[in-house]
Structure formats: structure tokens, C-alpha cells
Image 1 (tube, protein in one colour):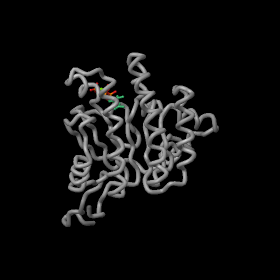
Image 2: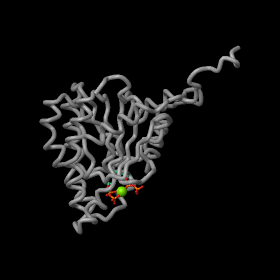
Image 3: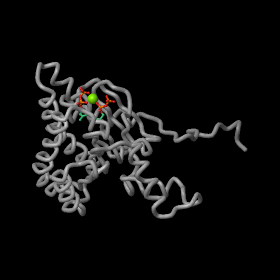
Image 4: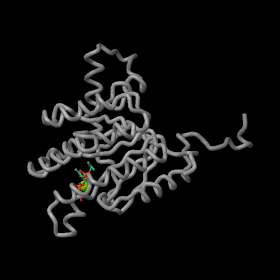
Length: 240
Ligand code: IPE
Ligand code: IPE
Ligand code: MG
């Protein structure tokens, strides 16, 4: 793919695992299993086209309200997938990090995550940012609490200051956000950071999402006109 105008940061809301399974008369856990298996190919594709950051929404803070058994299945899958993919991160130069409320995560998951984050921190081909136990509002509230704890006054509160206290500090804002499964909402994903993101919605359920569809989304992104509130070209007659 031509390098021009490739999104630097892509976010994916990986939705539709449950419906994928239910349509086949399978337990929802099968959908989650197939869902995590899809991640490898998509990460590879993102790296190939030289995306700098890929953010994947794996588990929202609201997802803690799902039945205990489903949560347990997802956590076990996340742990085993992370262990399995670790060698690949090292081989492919992928830096792994998470965003989200770590305090709510079980100790064993936190240990695996911290190990992967630490060991991969110097990798520079792609940042794989996993939103786990993540909620955009929760992230903003935690940032504000940090600001207060540091004694910030009204004059300190700027966009840059707040951005620097979010879990995504130092990571560019997403250029393109993809959501699978036909739902057209953010569900609390990267609220602050997506202010000027482009959106791509597809009916494809996450376990069916392929490398080709990722490339389609990138192609579509490249046709969009991003204005950031400005005008593309100042009309002559208004020239001052
Ligand atoms: C997305 O699939 C994965 C998570 C939210 C953990 P869902 O589990 O939400 O699947 P649907 O939306 O019920 O089909
Ligand atoms: C959003 O999907 C969270 C993830 C994909 C991890 P949900 O399935 O939880 O979102 P809602 O409930 O349909 O908004
Ligand atoms: Mg869903």
C-alpha cells in the first residue's frame, strides 16, 4: 500500500463475538475464543502497512457487569493469548501496553501485563495498545484526580496537561476508529482522544473481520477530508 496518508493510529472496537457464537448455536465463550484469535492477523496487517499505534478495545469497564462466568472466560483468554503472543511481540518489534483501570484487574492478569509492557518497552515497529477494564469517563476522572493530587490550579488545566495525565499520555490521538458488528456507538472508548477521529462502521462480526477489511477501512479513510474545524481552502472573495 502506498504510504501516503496512512492513519498513524487506528482504534478498533472489536464487537460481535457473542452474536457470532449465538448464530451458530455455540456458547458465547466460543465467540470470544474466535475473537482473540483474530487479533494476531490484524496486528500483523497493521504493522505491515506501517500504522504506528493500534488500539484494540478488549474489555470495557462496563463489561465487568457481565455474568461472572463470561468475565472469567474473557480474562483467561486474555492471559493465555498474551503469554502466547509474547514471543511474537519480541520477534516483530511490537510494544505492548494497556490503557484502563488496572486496579480492577485480577493480580495474575496484572502480572502478565506488566511483564509484557516492561519487556517490550523498547520495541518500536508498532505500539499495540489494549484497552482493558477501560472506560473513557473513568480515564478522565482518574486524570483529574491525579491533577488534584499534584496540586494543580485552574491555570494549569489545559488540553495538553489533561492529555498528559490520561492513560494514553504520549500516544497520538486515533485517526481512524473501526467498529464491527453494526453498532454505531463509542461505548466509552477513547472519548477524549477521538474528538477528531474518522469512523468506519461495518456489519462484519469481529470473529469474521479480516486483514482485507482492515485495508478497506484504511482505503476509505484515505478518501476522507479531515478539516479539524477549518476550511479546506479560504474562498477568494472573503480574502482579507
Ligand atoms: C465483544 O463482543 C467482546 C467484548 C465486549 C468483551 P460481545 O461479547 O460484545 O459480542 P456481542 O455484542 O454480544 O455480539
Ligand atoms: C464495547 O462492546 C466493548 C468492547 C468491544 C470491548 P460492548 O458490546 O460492551 O458495547 P455495548 O454494550 O453494545 O455498547
Ligand atoms: Mg457487544
